[in-house]
Amino acid sequence: MSPASVATLRPPRAGPHVNGPAPAVDPLTGAAVLLSVAALPLLTPAGPGNIAPADGLALLAVGTMLLRLGWTRERVRVPYLLGTGLLVAAGAASALRGDLPASGLLAVLQDLFLLTWAAALANFARRADGLRFLVDSWALSASCWGVGLVVAAGPSLLSGGNGGAPARATFTFGDENAAGFYFVLSMLVIVAARRPRRRSLRIIALACLALATVGSGSLGAISGLLAGVAVAVVLGVSARRGAALALAVAVALPVGVGSIVLLSERHHVVQAAHDSGNPLLRNSLGRGHQSSASRSELARETYELWRTSDAWGRGPVSTQHALRSAQAPYPKEAHNDWLAALVERGVLGVLGLLLLVAEIGLWAARSWDVRKLAPTVAAAVPAPQFVVGALATATIFSFTHEVLHDRSLWALLGLLAAIGIWGRSRPSTGTGGVS
Image 1 (tube, rainbow, N blue to C red):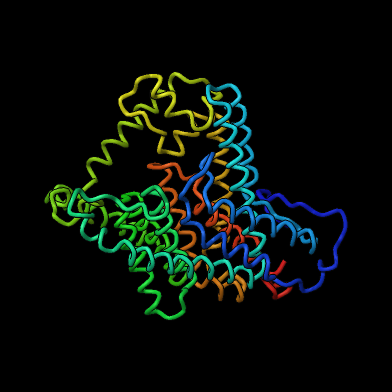
Image 2 (image 1 turned 120 degrees about the vertical axis):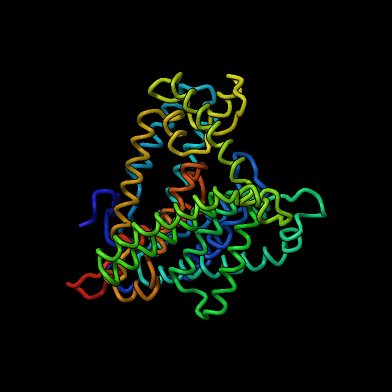
């Protein structure tokens, strides 16, 4: 029986492939999924409503997946429906009452689109072949992007560009933090899938993605990578050596990180990086104090905005407009999913976000232990704890940036749901991962 957090849509009548071995990856759907995943970095040029080239290919993947499901008459699972549904309802209600109803309703439509795309990926990967195709598509395309972007932008990354003030690299994303977020998630997916197969190629891909992450100057990405790896290590130790050792590692890691932070403060490492002649250090670690100060100021302004709001919220994407109207000294969007939900979507929005987090936690709990996955699924994702670790990266970002509308996040959530819904071993049939 499916957990309550998954909506199951049953067709009115059975089709020709319900009980038969329907192909896991048909050419049309596979090509559309491959293109949509490979196009995740294509966020420029952006059109009306922030529509990017990646969105058109994601829509193509959704359409072909719907055609496939209509033909095979397989049950459709829609993970994250409860949390996202409440967020959508809260966003629509607050948008209609707010100052920017058109922009707010557009944001609600984006919520629905991203949910649909994640559900399409999850249903595509319901069988082990589809899951393997999805993770291979992401890992190999991200490897190519990492190598290609570093080769193309290498001189400017290392020199800071024409001898002038060094600039943070946005690559094809149009935003430094979106770039860093994608690079970090991709590194964790590569490690989880162990693709490319050759270790030397995998190391090259990871090194290029790491360099691109540093080049983006995103401190959220760098700290998110550390958090994601730490969570994955603890989960891996728990699976292999037991909970006691995992608890010891979980305690030791924060102590070690805290000690490093104290030493860096004592020796003024951040200031030294800020004054460094190396543009990579200056644009990443050297921005630590400036980034922290700006985020604190923005959080304070957003909190004051919430104090003057009602329980329904001001409407999605209204924070910057409201701060400008109040003549705040730092008028920007919230850069914090939690504060944004509270200010823009009100109490219902916060409840929706908490419910979404609970749904994500459900699938994470069912996905991290490779020993409990079907053999074919474990072969496709031999280190699933790194997929779950990527959620720690998203959590870090949620407090410093708004990632709920990030396409890479919803691709990750689709992959996570596929493992959680269909990946568990089924002793009664011995064919885990096949619905």
